[in-house]
Length: 202
Image (tube, rainbow, N blue to C red; front, top):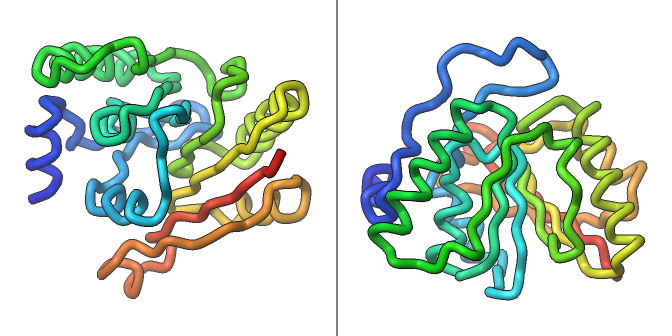
């Protein structure tokens, strides 16, 4: 029900999952974060209008439009699939047409996650298990180098987090675990249905 409600509210189409698998084992299939999960996440995780959130593996842009609409923050969607990137741009056009929101805080880029140049304004990064631990390590290293060069607090949000991601962050980086946000009803059946928040303090 919520899937249909929010897509209609935002005038976007994000409900279908990607068919098939990517030819590289390092990049996982697109699947949107359930809106019920986003509701729960943002009950406990504050997003300010001054934030700039980067979604790695953004697909058709669901998270980006949700944050932009409800919190008026800047959002950047990184997507390697040209097909999904084109769908995100089509959603952007229909979203802006209906909501009359300003487009200057809404960006999509078609590139590999590890090749995205971290912007000094980027301070929150979202991962729905989009790629292998090898790619994740490269991306986290890019984030840490940027935070060292342009000192700021940084937050990571992991949805459906892999044990490899967790182990790497907690044993090889300066990021510190802050909280776990379980998704109600489904977490009791599947303990991967949760968000983990990590912070890097400046």
